[in-house]
Amino acid sequence: MPATTRTTLRRGLAAAAALPLLIGALASCGYGSEAKNDEKKVAAEGTKLSADTIRLGYFPNLTHATALVGDQEGILQKELGGTKLVPTTFNAGPSEIEALNAGSIDIGFIGPSPSINGYVKTKGANLRIVGGAASGGVKLVVNPAKIKTLDDLKGKKIATPQHGNTQDVAFLNWISEKGWKVDAESGKGDVSVVRTDNKVTPNAYASGAIDGAWVPEPTASKLVSDGAKVLLDESDLWPDKKFVITNIIVSQKFLTEHPDVVEAFLRGTVKTNEWINANQDKAKASANAKLKDLSGKALGAKVIDAAWPSIQFTDDPLAATLQAQADHAVKAGLLEKPELSGIYDLKPLNKVLKAAGRPEVSDAGLGVK
Image (cartoon, rainbow, N blue to C red; front, side, top):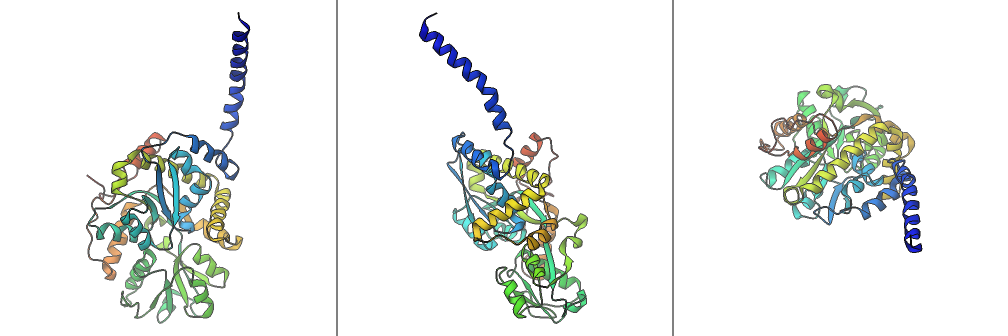
């Protein structure tokens, strides 16, 4: 055997011997902060899908922790391979819907009311809901010196995040069921509904400008840390204590042109939710690290420890509760009765769930035909 051949053979055998060690080392890298850089490197070297990038929108809220954690830990990027994830954060649903309609983002995490409004305003021509992300995480918190029972809310000033947003609709519906009257547009009536940005709500509470708030986490727990008391958890108002608080939406154009990218993204969200539910403490720390990265300040332990347990992370979009929330908006006078048939396309998600040996989820009769 020639010397060059023997040298090549020895190198090949050495590489083969090292291969199991390399595979073992890669297999030992679970999801987590320590694995993030390795996973992003793998993604950068992975096979690109049909799109160069996927532009993601989400809120810096704990109810969007699937996005926070999936981004922070590199889980979403890993599933996308060489297709680059480009995230953008928003503070309100209408601005995210506007970005989706303008083609500035392709996919997003968002609440049910903006999803419904976005679908209705384009007459079903632009967005689809392709998955769920979270349930719960909304509380009515009040000043205990002024409000001791639910009946004490009459005549008080209660904040919601935005006119017509998901919490605004829920509170107006609750007021209606109490038999009280409030003008949905002005917020004036038996209860004063004060539309206040979540970032401003703690200061408004501290100054006495509001007596309480119907708000998502972590705003609710921030108020509790300032002396407020939880008077009602919205989950207690729903069957099985479940209601959609965060959907995953996508532009129909992007879904049609890049179904492989959407499927890969949903595979990432399913794996992210699985990791969150199996590693609650690590996931909570990961979400907080991403919040610090986005805002420059992490949530205090007192706030995040109180907020986290009230949120359920689920792939199921809980479609029946979306229909119920649309009905609540109609009853409140915020929305004409909408035609929601076709708002869901759960085929990509159910394909991912089936491949993972998981049961399919329902669109409650509101899916594409």
